[in-house]
Length: 395
Image (cartoon, rainbow, N blue to C red; front, side, top):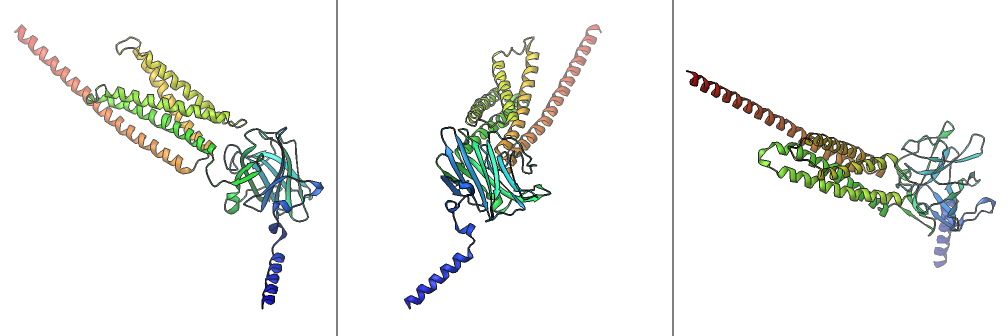
């Protein structure tokens, strides 16, 4: 009985081993490259039957890599990329390879700026001294390259993909299934590859930067303007509107300075990664906000002859700062590649503030017009009383 059971188990094991394709049965360490190439470190990537192999050279911070797609189709392209700014293909520094119509392999570099890039050859933010590709007889498509790494690239996000060829050029890949999950991190020094199951510390810092700036420049500052413009119309508000205005603007500026500082820290920690429009707008906004703070120290008294000009300056700079801030916040959403819920939530805040401003604007004009009519009636009545008294005096 025991002998029959042993024979049955052996037969099942043999049958399973024969049915499983070699590319799936072996791990990255079992693979033998052509040309006597060897790599000290490798990891099987969790999606698309791919693996990454590399040798890291700390003396000159270079890495010789091999990105391998097993079971690859000659009618598909493959790509592997580093993306220090986000865990997505958008913005990545990419290596691409595919088989040409004559059977030869073509490998090149490109930068992907949006979800539907043209994938035309382009230089990267770091040097790639060599890049080649091959398609092996066992159905493996492989990209070989040497990368000149920086501090930030030694441990960063990696993305990989495959997609169909379209008229001799790489076509659009699927965004669902494994294609939508082919993202992770790679540490060339420690030899580790992780899936992006959590939020990295850098992502957390970017989120903190975004929240600080959205709350300060994008919410507190507009609220302060609304208070100054509308509450002072109500006599019952007295001088309270001024103090509320100062509190909002001062708090907004203080939080904004913290957000501005975190932005510069993120920039210094990410050499080679720049967001020109977002950064330049941030510098301009901070400069205008600082000018507003110093302008408060030079505010003339209400009856001073230069107070009118100071008011024009104060209002112009204030409104300009808020408009630029709102625009830069949406630039920041694009940089963060944040979920739509964040952008939707902020749009909701802006809509609410806009409705409040519209209602208060109408109410303010109603009060102002009513007061002007009352003042005109009082002046007219006072004029008639004076005229009557003069007639009585001459009678």
